[in-house]
Length: 306
Length: 307
Image (cartoon, rainbow over the protein chains, first blue to last red):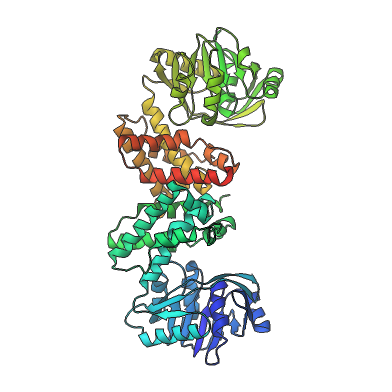
């Protein structure tokens, strides 16, 4: 089996390194970060933290070098999906392409370039320490499901099996929208609140008025999911309260807060913006998510002021 | 000559004091004695739209304010009004007090500390302080004045005429609430959004080309405010959305005080502006989910650096 991982930031690197440990899987890592690719080709792709692994994927920043693959795993930030899949579609045309990205709309973007798409949601997390070396901070499951009837379920199972054997537990399910929307609602209802206020997750949740705003955002997301007959696999409210515990993620600065502090473009358009877009399509009002999206886009606009 | 006290010498207080000192006998009440001493020694310079230096008296001690003051303008920030009004208790007998703070509720605060006749004012001018004795007059927009307690429109007009004689823009109204509410809704919306996005009040606030553009949120926030005003029986003097559009077309990127406060990690005027509007909405049973969200977010942002 040949797998191309498109976008090897932290999450993509976790997949690339772990899958490359399997004898029956050949892994290609594709990323525009040339230093990272050169380090991988020279020294391998090292993970440390939750597990210590040195993988040996092929790595390239030149999409033309990618051979035809059975699977693609797209792991870029959501705003880079379009250029990433456009550049690599030639190698993935006969395979199945899974997204393990954040947010809503990545599947649609990928499906404009390749025929068989797998919807995925993944929970492992880490950070790129230096070229060729990723800190594996959080272990977690991945859920994969066919995007539409063109994707054979057997292929979804084959990819899930490879990931699981490589040390990244994955489940193949008929409808992967439940986990996806649960994660999107969780992220959209908490990340931008941290980004706008500067508060950690726990401090957001311990302010009753702010926690009520979070619930307002969650309720809109749930209503949009319900209108599509998506059954969430867990209640985002419980996950939010769980994460707020001292021993879990009380002091965690949401990735969007980290993005804002580093003045990096956020994934707001694919989180709250995605909920607003689907809400519009299904006639469900989402005024709070729209407000939060506009505010975070305002923050981004403030960085380009003269 | 009219004897006037200006309490508070931030940018608005400084602009008022320096201009009034050209036509009245002005004493500035400052918080710091060095500030008062500097004003007594060097006077107060105005640059920008006008260019002159006034000499005036100043003190940091409310007990040393002159007798027979006709008009006292309380020009401190809304966050400083409670201690200022308390410090004036028992002083300035016979003076008419005028509040000029943003938001709602300044008059009520002053009213609890003395029997003075009260005027309300809102101001749209702006300035930038360059030290204790120099203020730049940036926006020469008007100050609006109206009666509040034991005062009439003609008294408001006399104060407006005094400000105009000193070189400022001013207008009197029989009832200030329509103007005050227009500014309240404008400030709650623009200051709140600026404090959350770090954007100065610029073209983004009126932009509506894309669905996620900020102008849509600004208009929705204004609409909530207008519904509250309507429920309160106030017919607005200006449409806050049009005020917003006009202000963004001036070509001047104004930094609202709430944004400056948040960036300097100071307490903001949130409670008297956004808090007042949200509490009015609740009192009147008018839904204001977006104004409430902005209020809570700014309050939390303040908490992120003040706790």
